[in-house]
Length: 409
Image 1 (cartoon, rainbow, N blue to C red):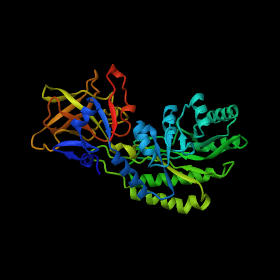
Image 2: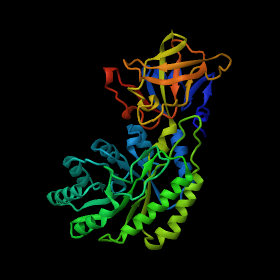
Image 3: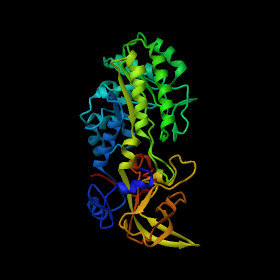
Image 4: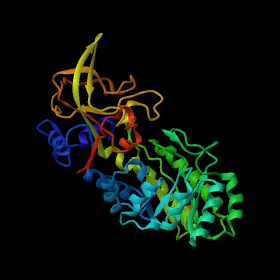
């Protein structure tokens, strides 16, 4: 689906948008009012099924909890995916509270504190080593706890992905160890009391171009196979990253998942399995799994005209949904798909409006000059593509307004 056809993926009832079969106005009463986030359980299940159908059967699917750490979402996905990637002690705790075994959980990210590393080592999860200093701390902690820690090397690749919404590899980076430095570190770790399982490369995120992703995967596989030759023990784990994007804006087109899966199948058959037939091969996805399965709902509390422009003022804003305001990395602000959730069948009277939040900043814009059915005070505004990097990626404490509810149906 395109960004704006996402609206059609949610059912309607008597002109009202529904999530999990529940109309928005009823849902608002259930959760105690607006604003709130709602995630569709069935859509999550379907998205994982689509991935399973397109990917090679021996590729493991790991969910990056940072995309949406809501406990109910994490628990639901624990029955669908093969593993979790976490980036904090709290995310680690959420992952460990599911049925996913610790051996299938990875802990990535720069700046892990000694306390976080101790928790990770004691839990038996795989720590993605981001620096030489972190590797040495891991060894010390393992000795202190009397535990042989499980770890993998996160590699900053010697190539960059073009077309990604956010580049996380290539050139100088705070993420991972430069590819050319990895053999030196591996030599240092060769005598360490550590279960060094393999290699992890995550070069970028939010990519919609299958050809670009395929090229990045080919380069990633060539890199990890080259570095695997310098590993002090047989490689048991390759994390090829993810980067699968979803369409947010009107001209965006969805990722061709079939082509991406076919490329991965070829890489597995012709390269990885030839040398490492038993290694776990993982792709790590967050946004692609949850992003299109959630909405943000906020209510119009005021309607005003100012010098020829109409503003709909809502009771939410960027403090809950920063990404839709453009402040989560958009170079040029563009509108997310947006609708009046209780007027879904009203296409007779439309107007151009700007939807703004209640914060004391001109940046608090959820929709700028969007064409929508006529809406008034009390109507419900719905922001789509809100399942990933929504509430927990937003400055919720700004101006000290109440936090939004979150619900999985």
